[in-house]
Length: 191
Image (cartoon, rainbow, N blue to C red; front, side, top):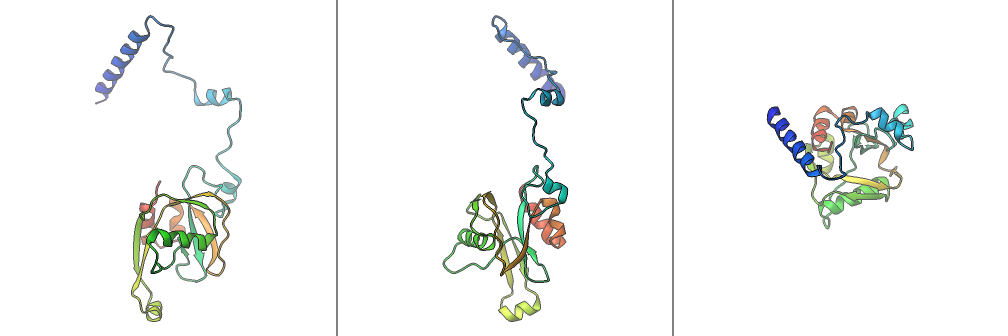
């Protein structure tokens, strides 16, 4: 396979040389400048990819782990399974997307956000604990996940429902969720 690719590349080089033979064009050698030489030649110094939020592990900041996608999770005001993605019940007049918009706005205030799709990225269902089962007279819940991007604004956490929030990367989910949930959600989140 490699021999074939090299053969095609060689023919491409020969074709290009033939095309520029009688012109002012020239081919640059393939051994161009190094990464360090490129950085030195730039008229500015690129910003450091490691931020103060990285150094202090400030998970309430989106200015961390700049190379990774971060995902918003919120902490409910309860002891068990407190951390979750913003979620709420579907109202009769709503479709899933409208409910997701309402829930996000309720949880973090009105921020500039963009829903990637009208369809959920995935869903998860679970059985309620016995005490909740008896109280609600419902077997469990289905949670539909929507991918949304924060465009602008600051989080204004709804403090009647939530006590904290965090921006986490895929590989940090296990610190907040049980193993089964963390693995499932990790697989539906984009890289």
